[in-house]
Length: 312
Image (cartoon, rainbow, N blue to C red; front, side, top):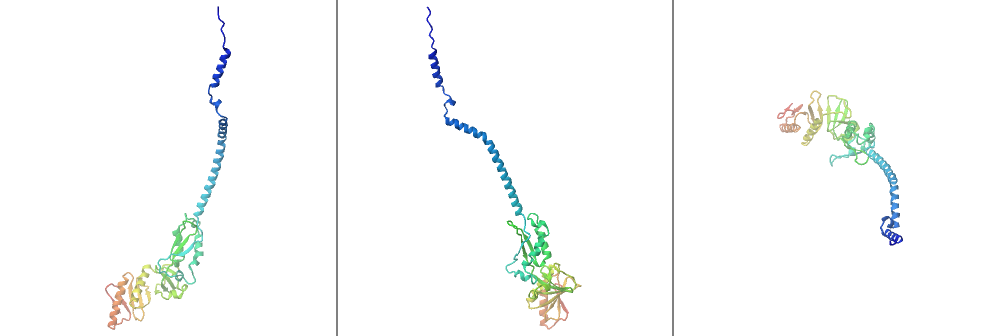
């Protein structure tokens, strides 16, 4: 009556097994090489933090050392040698040999030791950032006036400073009861006349100061304007063949000068507050007129007042 149901157990199992075999799986089908690469990558990613930390630490140490080295180099580059080099800074192409303007026996190089001492007086003089170059130059000028104008030049590269000097050219010889001194065009005492060679002193005009003022090297012997006034008069008169023997600064008239002329019985009175050219021109004019009339003053010719001439 009833039909026997047939079970398909084995057949269904085979079909299911085949279906499972056909299902794609990434992990089941990837190649072995990929597995190896994945393991190596995972291994390297696990070890990289340790290597990176070690590398960064080493670089930091290198940077610190490099920074200290650079700071040391910069600090050293700002230091100065205490042995500067002295050179002449020419004010014009026609300058005389520098050594001929200095006291006899002295050369420009002979001042190096003294200037080294000035640089060693203060530790600030050994650093480019701290040195007061103007103050050092002024100290050199005060101690050695014969060096004239001094400038301290600091090197941008290197450590040796350069001292540039324009030596003061001897202008006049100033004599008083205390001695004879060589003055520059600025009126400053360079040194005693005895310190200079005779061939340097001989062509210089002689000015006699009757005030008896005591002087020493570096002192202001005369005002610079007075020296210029005297030199202008001498040049003006000698251009007209009048030779000046000497010039006297009377003690009772600080602005007057008495000019003694060679082969003349009289002296000429000038005033330094006036114009040197006008007064010199007045003297030349009256001298020419007196020669034409055979009148010769025996005491003085006074040209101090502009437009007027007095003689005696």
